[in-house]
Image: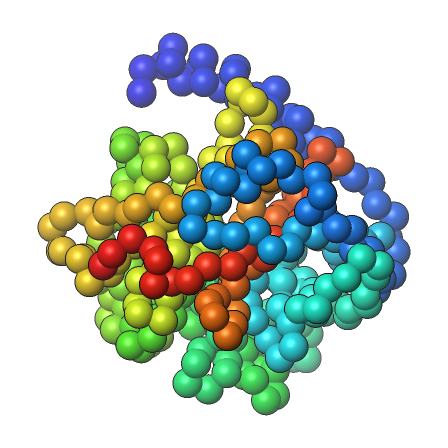
Length: 332
C-alpha cells in the first residue's frame, strides 16, 4: 500500500478508534455477581430482522453488570442448562437459557489458570475462542498473541497449555480467534489477522484431530471483503457457520455477517468459498458481535450470539437467539 494511502487510512480511522476504545468506562473495583437483563426485542425493526435471512430472531437481550469482571465477551459455548461466555480478559459468565427481564447472578472466575511448580498462578491470558470436546467434555480455549491452546479438564479443572506449531508465525493479534471441533473428529482454526487484504481471503488450519496433537493442513477461505473471522460453529452435517466482522467509519461502528462454508468442497490449491447468509446491520442490531454457539431444539437449532462491549460507554453487552432449520440453508 503506498505511503500516502496508508497515511490517509490512518487519519480516517484514528477518530473512530478513539471513539470505540478511548471512551472506556471507569468502573470501580467492585464485586457484584448480579446481571441485569433487559428485553431488546420491541426496539428491533422488521427491516433489520429481514436481513437475518434464514435465521429468525427469537430473543434479544441487553446484559448489564456492575462487577469489574463483567463484559468483554469474545467466545460462547453451551453448558448444562445454559451458556458459558468467556471474555478476552479471561473471565467467564454463566448465562441461563431461560432468560427473562430482571436479573440473574453468576460467579465470574478465570477461564484459564496456569499453575506453576512453586505454587504461584498465571491468569493473564487473552481468551478468544472456546470449544467443548464432544469426546470427553473438556474445554479447549484459543488465545490471542499466543501459539498455544488450553485444554481444561472437565472433572478437575486442571489446565494444560498445548503448543500449536502451525500458528507460530501468525501475526500479532492472529491467534485462534475462531476454533471449532467438527462432527467427524477434525478441528478447524481460523486466523483473524492472516488475511491478504484482497477480496476477503483468509488463512485457516484443518487438523486431523485435536489441535497441537495432530497434523494440520493449511487452507485459504474467502469471506466478504474487509471482514475478518471472529468465531465458528459446525452444523451437524459438517458444514461451518462463520461469524465475520469489520470496523467501519461510515456509519461508525461494527458490521457483522454470518457466512456458510462447505468443507467438503475444500481443495488444497484453491480458496474455499463461503456463502453469505445473514447481516447484522442497522442501529438496533449493530454491535461488536464476537461469540457464537449452537443449541439443539425439537424442530431446528438455536444460534446464540454475544457481543464484546470493549468496556466502552458507546457499546453494550448483548445476547441474541436466532432460530433456524439447517436443512433450509444453501445446498451442499
